[in-house]
Length: 186
Image 1 (tube, rainbow, N blue to C red):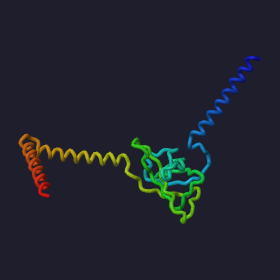
Image 2 (image 1 turned 90 degrees about the vertical axis):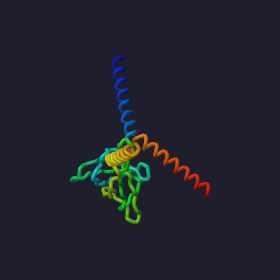
Image 3 (image 1 turned 30 degrees about the vertical axis):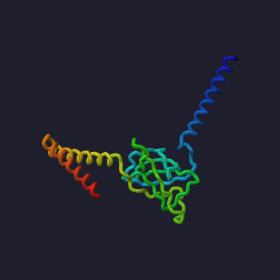
Image 4 (image 1 turned 180 degrees about the vertical axis):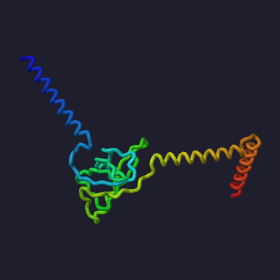
């Protein structure tokens, strides 16, 4: 009898812990809210950095999550679950924005104009052109570094020996004296 009672207590404890774990998971997980809110979608050329359950914001305030990312022809379809009570209009637009230097991307929605009528569940949001990607930024930094190397090489050719350095030093001294002279006369 005592063994049966202990087994029942352990079983009850397992059930309580399992129920508490599920409740905590549903409370913490943003995307587990189920069918609350409404769906909209957008079509993008490139969704690099976006993942399901990424944030969707309006003016920096979270208003939904990315529910699904799929291929639609040769482009990417992003299904977005918008929180209930958030009003978007037919001319609303959505764009990708960097959320951090680590490559995290989120979607930012501009709600649109109320005079255009309210967006219905299942409607498409107009996608904005993508902002500079990390690859674009790295390419630009590389180009700048090449330019700096060229300028440095030219400076080294022009002033790379002691005579040229002395001449430059003298020219800068003369320029400084001329500026002081002009300042005194003014």
